[in-house]
Amino acid sequence: MSDIDVKAFVDKQVEAVKGVLGEEKALVAVSGGVDSTVCAVLTHIAIGDNLICAFIDDNFMRLGEPDRVRAMLSSPPLSLPVKVLDERERFMEALAGLKDAEEKRKAFRETFYQTLSDAAWAENCRFLVQGTIKADIDETKGGIKTQHNILEQIGINPVERFGYKIIEPIASLYKYQVREVARYLGTSSDVSERQPFPGPGLSIRVVGEITADKLDQLKAATTVVEDAFKKERPAQYFAAIMSGETTEAPKILRREAAEAMEIEQPSIGSKYLSERATGIVEGKRSYGFVATLEVKDEAGKPLDLGYEALERMRLEVQSNFPEVSRVLYLISGREDDEGYLVVMRAVETQDFLTAEVSQIPWQTLEAAAKKILSTCPKVVKVYYDVTPKPPATVEFE
Image (cartoon, helix red, strand yellow):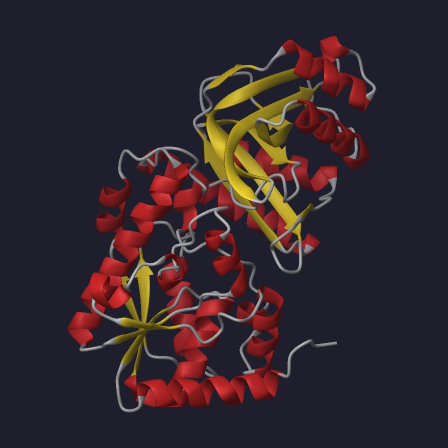
């Protein structure tokens, strides 16, 4: 049963947008996601042809995404006026050499709004409509991570900085409520049920420094994971990529993990990755170690220990080593240790403020991992993230 009056919400927001904009033009950055699409539809109802929809191709989209999104949004029943802005080189240059997660998010945000400022100037727009939702505000103000679409809530004046005012029609809603509004507005299930995709796109799933090589490998791995996990219907599911550089984890960590899983210590392997990942400690952001764990049979094949054992292991590790923000379990790998690591992630959640690990069947994990290894020649190991939120965040950065 809905906890909002959807019709009343839509009527109120359409009138509010109409009241603010009047005869003015407005620009909305659309991604194909449910948040930005709902904002675009509400604004289109309010001001009609005075709305300009811009899709920014920042090079951090999934394979074929710009063309798919333009076709989907510009076709009936939505029939939105969509322009694709090719800004791939601009974004790659802006994030070049950055390794810190927060610095990457801030650089993306600055470039994103400067790009929109240029587009707004060209279209003679003084207003930007964006799909900020309640969870974005909660996480940014709470210090968990910077959302690219949060400005005024953290003291940035968009008029002074970028030359336009911002309208946020759905900032009072959580994701599941936005989906209800999308269904009411008649969007297709491709929009209303679309899994979340972060504003900075794949830039925050290339953990650490972004290179064209890592990005290409990640795009291919993302397609594999989305195709494989879709039938399981998690709330969100994706791949991330890391450099593959590691150090040995403390021996006591392996011992604690082995005891939790009720196996012999010599049969377990554990390392720390060189990159750190975002976590949550006492409601605040932290950057913790990423610990990998693997248990193999006599033939060297990773074992399916079951989610109950993996959760005991994860709890034991993070209880005794609070500096660890993520625990990954090996699904498949090559003999060669030189190459990238891919992490598969899937979670169950309603509001995205907390999330549980999706219990994807081992056969599905294994098949996806093997396909990634065959599709991505520079990837040598594939893991599954077994960490809930908290202590992890859904995304790695």
